[in-house]
Image (cartoon, rainbow, N blue to C red; front, side, top):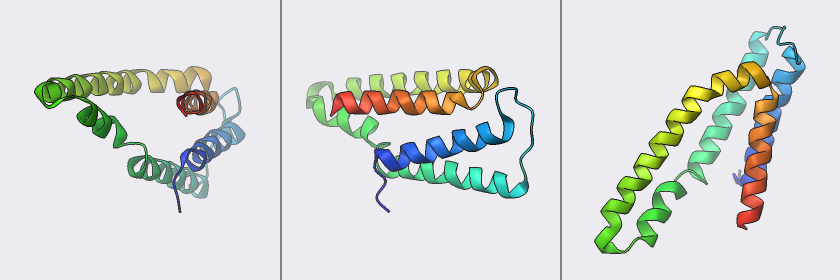
Length: 120
């Protein structure tokens, strides 16, 4: 299976839709064991697809565009920015999920779709 951005976005929409279907906007509901396995499988497929396609670009592109004299400084800046945004995502994802419910997955999908389309 080719993991392009549309496949990844479909996985993300499916996760948001299942959570929205089961919990709604008030956040009351439950997941059966089958539902949790489906959600876990979709999330694993999304992470695997991202790791095979878009994930390495954050490490590869900066190392290729920086001249040899400043490559180590460029990579250290890249790692610092990557860790900072990973920290921010870790801090605010649960809060976003509590306030925005399943819409947080759709908002992320929309943001990714818009930014990828403008880059192309």
